[in-house]
Image 1: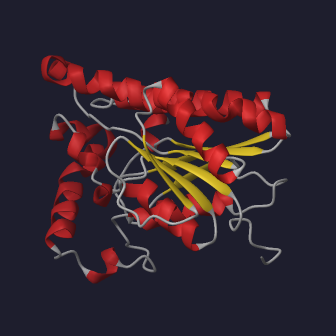
Image 2 (image 1 turned 30 degrees about the vertical axis):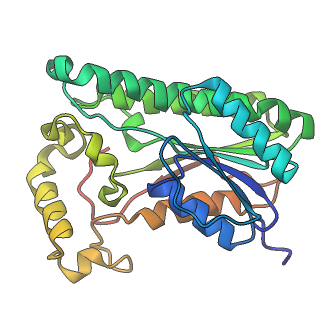
Length: 272
């Protein structure tokens, strides 16, 4: 293992590993020589190998999270990193409460309780080793309250608070990273949106342009410069950019902590 490689040999637990960022982080870190416990309530489509543990896990159930963490420790001997990735995004206005309430309740359970359950499941192990790293997926929606994202934004603000409090309490023992992506349509997270009009809080005066951009992206007609990550007009962030940022935060010496990362496409229209 090269001296500048801080991925190979690490034991990493990833929640929400069946899709989106979780799937990419699982695949990329396995390819780098990590041992990965891939957790999800849905089936995880990865080829089984000695470095991969797949566990059907509901992050909202503290007992299931602890069982999964214990299984990772038994299999790999340790947990170096937890990536709390599982989440839902039921954007809706308060006037949508009748049809949004169930999705909001699930969002509170997954986005707050799920993150807390993950942190609690690995806390004692990491403290006992005086070494660990927790990566929590937040969002730019957690930066400031806006219309259409009262519940979702509150859950991500809670993730920010939980993370920073843990960092302060555990300095020198547990590193904490908060990842704040902007909109990433290709993850499928948008499928949970209750009212499509509720994106107005994120796009404001740019809403029409954003809808046009996403429609062009989905249909394959987006101009080349807006699809090119090497062009300043790059407009739709690809999930790999977020996965790579997560991996960059993990790929650091134990004494270096990347604590807060916001990831944007340079040409995107979001206002937060």
